[in-house]
Length: 390
Image (cartoon, rainbow, N blue to C red; front, side, top):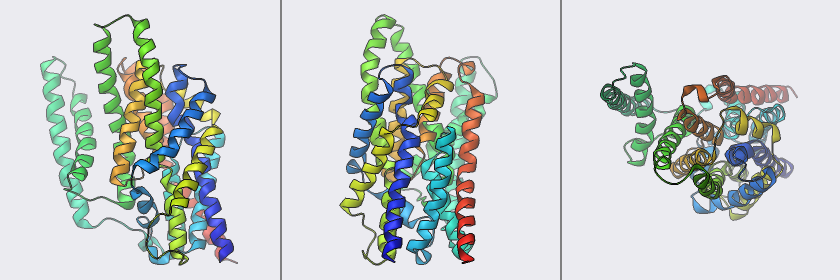
């Protein structure tokens, strides 16, 4: 049993290490793209501030990962270990080929696959009918409200393209759900929260970055020369990268915390789901080390291939991504750093027109988002079934 526990803790820390290897791109992409910092300096800055993130927030995300995905009564150190094997295998493969996937969703898929193997689909913690009904109600309010607002704006500017209604509805939905959660009107946890925030987090990142970059563009047209503004925003972008790293640490670093705490709880080493301090430090250290070692292929795709950006856009994207991650961490939702920053980069690019965004690259990234949870689940389920034969 002790060997399994040690192996599980080691693999959980390895998962955070590979997480940092993959998600280094998400944090430093805009800083490198605008040549504010060299890759080495940018990654070093991110690694330091990742360590700070979990100390500024609660460990609610860790609890969601450890207790909100699979029925805790069937969780054992061996089952968690199998789930980790599936998630780490998928994440390492994606890092190797340069696909910017979500480490959080890879982990959740791995745990789901192992849980299904052990207890069937009933082992998954799914939302109640009341939660789904509330979600639909508040989501519809957001869709209708957003469509009305954007439809009215399009009418006022003389552009009656029906796509404004669609865009307004999507943005209204993405804003209404987290707002309802912050106000305590609806409680969404576990697998359901992970699933819906695959859509919501990039839309929030897009909206925040598009708005911020648009406001800065208007300011730039009346204040100073472009060279002066670029100099200012190059300095500000360093702070934005630090904020993004803090948000990343506050959310993604808690993946290993949740798994290790679940292992300790299932083995009887602790009696309640409270994350020990040494687990927090070890998890942050692992993800920071992974970040220091890079992930060059993923950085190239995120920094250069989605859209061409300048310092004020890089500042807008990093700040927006960091704010989205921090907000989700306070709600205890394990969202994707990849999704948030990709949406943000798309948002700043879209301020230059739709043609400024390379939508073909975006489609590749979105496809990876969609398949991550089921792919990691299939890997861990297959591994569970293979082990069960022996």
